[in-house]
Image (tube, rainbow, N blue to C red):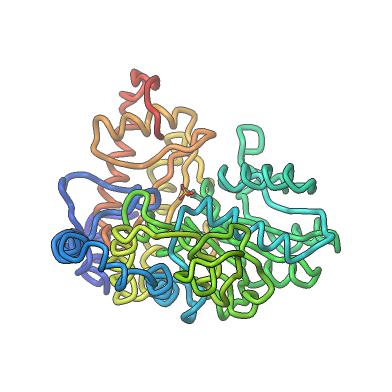
Length: 425
Ligand SMILES: Cc1ncc(COP(=O)(O)O)c(C=O)c1O
């Protein structure tokens, strides 16, 4: 049985315990279990951005570009070093995950001319599926969806994790591109990047990974694991702020095979000659489109330097222990109240969140926010997602949140919650 004392003992022995105080926590009684959706604000970011306003943009005005012009690359290197296991020169911090995903998939497909098939899974994040549908229409390709999605009908039969054996059934020499999320946004299941990438490559296909739900929680090792192409965001476990730029990773070995599908002026050889005709510069700069958000990049740099200092292996260990604790509390308290765990029980097969199904999940999730100061999120069908973001979250905060979820569910008070009128779940 998990007790508050157990959670306090975990905090006392937590090598990351000093990091919570480095984040702005406006309401200490809030149990913030949604760092997998939007991370908390590092106090250092406030100072860095204020300094930029005064001494950067404010003081230097346009001359500042001399300092800022390469920042998509330099900040990309910080992300790579801190959280992706990527040596310099392979990551750009820019645009949104969706734009980077489009760019990465188009570049991969063009590098496999004549092949007509794209493979993804039905559990993939909506923006990825929609973009792939668009690309398939645009280029006349076949989009194959592995049917692994948790729905009301498939509940209990899938954890949305695609295995090598499953993928093998779909691979052949017509496949140009395979793409999956590293961690499934709904179930939280973690894919085997190394084995799946190798399986696709054995058939001549390229793999694009969406690591949005993994970066900053999972010990990603792209260079070691032979990943060719990946994209992800910075605002979840990356704590870089709402709408902060995303990133794209192209391994050194794949870069020469790829053309940028969007010919922006930042990708142009000798950019400031401003000459006629596009010629893509070598290296990651050749995949940059345009002027980056310097405010966004400074937020990323600050937050990922904290991740680097804390150590991604330590962070991942806390995500594993924290989600183990959640599953213990689910077994004891929540399963008897009608919840079902949708996430793998083996911590090596999940990221930093778990998802709990309950027939009244929508009302419970809304009621927890409105009346119990617990912030989870809700995902169809009837899933409540709860995460531990290892730097700003304590074990005791997770424990307290689960106690409130248990007591609120047992009370039945959520039954009167009105679900109309919320734009975001
Ligand atoms: C797995 C995944 N991919 C893509 C996105 C979309 O990100 P963006 O809005 O930055 O394009 C999200 C957003 O939460 C996500 O979770």
